[in-house]
Length: 236
Image (cartoon, rainbow, N blue to C red; front, side):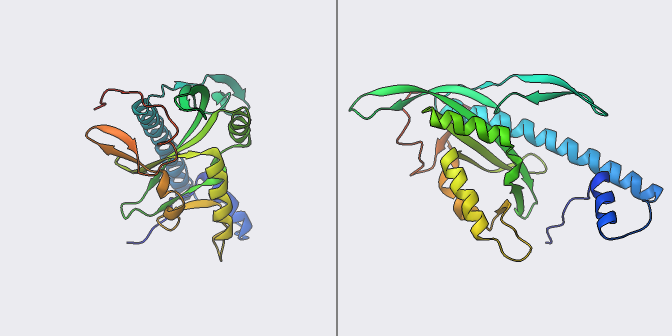
């Protein structure tokens, strides 16, 4: 099965036409198709965002970390009207982690950015790492430097909403992964996206698994030896 890319948006189609020196405007039929593709991409993005954020909260709940959604400000953009703009990363919470002394523990701030992407039925696809904005990166880095847990939660979905895989990655691990992707740049691939399944080896150790109705980090996951056991009840 071929991994066909989605139809470009109207703006992207016009940009490609200009770059290729196509000296004609889009036909009425092409305009209709481009607008329909743009609306479909927007709907898919919104739906995937809802899936990924809901999953993120459930998985952290299973770990005993209760996340709250960060407030979004209502701003006005010329030509687009009012939109919601996040004031930080998606979620904030607190977690009890093990201290250096035996039996000791401390409470830290947790900041989580939840990202999701869709893949084809043959489980091929990719997620652009630059989808993490400069502002989101700054929040994650500042929280890490202050001693908190800064995390990227990444989930892959099929178009019908079936979960393929999910991962909880620390901010430092994420930055290392981005560097590794750049080392793999070759030909048309510039290292700017996490590809499925080609780059799965870089992230598989951070996977979350569901057993008996409850989410667990896979064996050897960095969170396993860090969090204080909480005895959270099973989640269905």
